[in-house]
Amino acid sequence: MSAPHILILGAGVMQLPALQIAKREGWTTAVVDGNPEAVGRNLADTFGHVDLRDREGLVAWAQAYRDRRRLDGVFTAGTDFSTSVAYVAERLGLPGIPFETALDASDKERMRRRFAEAGVPSPPFFAVRAEETPLLVAARAREIGFPVVVKPVDNMGARGVVRIDDADGLPAAVEEALRYSGDGRVLVERFIEGPEFSIDAVVRHGEVVICGVADRDIRFPPWFIEIGHTMPTERDPALRRDLERVFSLGVRALGITNGAAKGDIFLGPQGPVVGEIAARLSGGYMSGWTYPYSSGIEPTRAAMRIALGLPPGELAPLRAHVSAERALLSVPGIVREVEGFDRARAIPGVKDVFERVAAGDHVVFPRNNVEKCGNVIASAVTRAGALQAALQAIRAVEIRLQPAVHETERFLWGNAVPGRSESGGGGEPRTEGAFYPALEAMPIDLCEVASWKSVEGHTDYCGRTLGETMSVLQQCEEFAVVADLPPDSPGRVRFRIAVSRGGLQGGRFFLDTIREDPTARERVCFAE
Image (cartoon, rainbow, N blue to C red; front, side):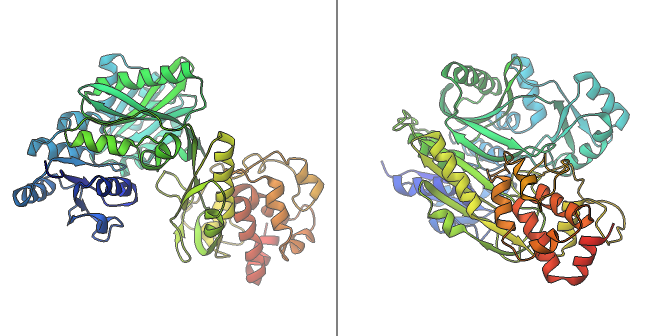
């Protein structure tokens, strides 16, 4: 039999493992992407420029390709387009799940209904349309109980997802989530307090084969920013089996019988609860990178084989290593320079460093999982070794921002930016996203060594202690300018808040601003 032909939707970074596996297996690849310059297009045997949301266009392209050659399966990983895969597969009679099943696994309202019908543990919920009144939404939210999570029904990557603790925050949260919803619906569900896990599996003839369970590190409420994951979970085997059991119930409730499944599972007060299950493999460097580094299992290869109508192949672990992925974040602003990516790559145990930011770029503090500045992946025999290497790599990279930029100042100091007249309000409330969150409310003086050493136990999102941050900032010439200010001066207070909100990057921004802009120095150091 000649080598199979597989259609892969997407040629971005997340699809690179699939493209590389296909080449290694000797399969012929037809690849389509809405980006004509997609990074993986040169790995394809045939490339087509097609919007992955255009289902009819995908069917037409795939049919034309099959008429010229042959086509044995269609696949994607790490994209929003599992429904497009199912649509093409159904129309062309290729292996896969029904289109309606893919919709159940993509539309969060439909998903929740399938779980409820099958008795799968999942949060109480209701759906909201744009025309519904805030009073009605608030009343229904009280019925299921605050806090709640507001999210679009049809998006991924935590776009538009936020935790709301009372009715006052609901109207703005619903409006924001609607911006990310393709059909104008938002889900409101009860917040589940507890750790979160990610599970990938392949399914053939209804048999769910778990590939692994990862611990997710979610931070910066009220958003749900995954700063990284660690594979495998450190939970005991009995709890892991319980997580896998509930996940498998959810997979079956959705009707995923041939293909892949990715789940976000919470460990709530009463046990495992299904957050979401998608009919695809996970993105976030998980299925294509940390699974193989950790166990030697390649979920991508297994899922591609199923998409071709083949058995998944051997999925027994080949090794027992630990993989850790961690993200690089920034406060908002304009990047002046980035240094340290090469240092990060040289750290023992670091497998990959993904750069997503360069000088001149506009950066934001992430409110979802697609607004990060880079990622690192490390692997080691022990969990401590993998985590240490990953966090050391993140700390090796420094993003310096252009000084005296209003957007950065507004993030650090809120709407009351010193010396600037605010028009139209807005701005970042200073309760969100602090790198050293406890520091902002503490009456300590960072210009006094004894003072900041008294809270030395505090670390930022990448494990950098306050002492490590301050030891770097103290070497800057402008630190003496701040230290010479009166202890209760606005400048000393703002310096502390800049470090609290932005860590080393925030402190650098403050010191660069007072060095390079005399007007800004007066404004930042002395304006009430």
